[in-house]
Amino acid sequence: MSAPITPTLLYLDNVSVSFDGFRALNALSLAVDHAEMRAIIGPNGAGKTTMMDVITGKTKPNEGTALYEGTHDLTSLDEAAIAELGIGRKFQTPTVFEMHTVEDNLLLALKNKRGPLATLFSGIAAQGRERIDVLLERVRLTAQRHRRAGELSHGQKQWLEIGMLLAQEPKLLLIDEPAAGMTDYETADTADLLRDIARSKAVIVVEHDMTFVRELGVKVTCLHEGSVLAEGSLDAVSANERVVEVYLGR
Ligand code: ADP
Ligand code: MG
Image (cartoon, rainbow, N blue to C red):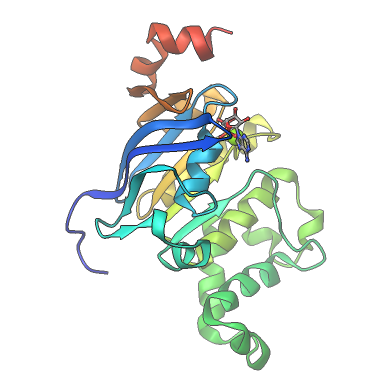
């Protein structure tokens, strides 16, 4: 891996998205560094999901740019090209192959990266097995290796899906509300897992659970009406009067 030229991995500059005249994003600017984890908070309708849609190319902004690695303008690329650049997204509902084992789910994700032909013509080569060992350790599922994904708890399914994303070797991971529906124990483990991942990758995580956000211990951006309302440590953002008014105090 070559050294980054600038510390900024992703730079959203003045991004606006309108739906029938309604501004879901309103001159939004945001910078995320290499191997930074950023937590995004804000009330429903603030534009959090729309922001992720812009980064992944699902939605094209009416104005603004989304620069990735200083050179790629994501607003001019389609979703497949953006995924190729190493941007992976995890939606709120886990989408694992329930009938397959944990190991096979990871294997499929690894093979996807290598292309469909490799899937047909190879079993678990030694190299693949090693990578799966590492991924299983990472997402805390080593003991569940041979269980069917459908038998996992909700939290474990979320971890498996994170493992499947990691198999694609992204540089930037977008994760929407990972703690939703998790037990307190799973939530704490998920914070741990994301901190672990963020040592080598950038992570943008949207979350409403403030206990979880506190456990992440990272810079927080609060969105409201499509723009940044406040940014900084969770303590600083939580103490912001406007943040309390529109979000935390409700
Ligand atoms: P959040 O994820 O912060 O809850 P969203 O990004 O989903 O917010 O939505 C921001 C605003 O944009 C909301 O008011 C929502 O209703 C609106 N919106 C999002 N997607 C569309 C769409 N495809 N068409 C019309 N309005 C949309
Ligand atoms: Mg949303």
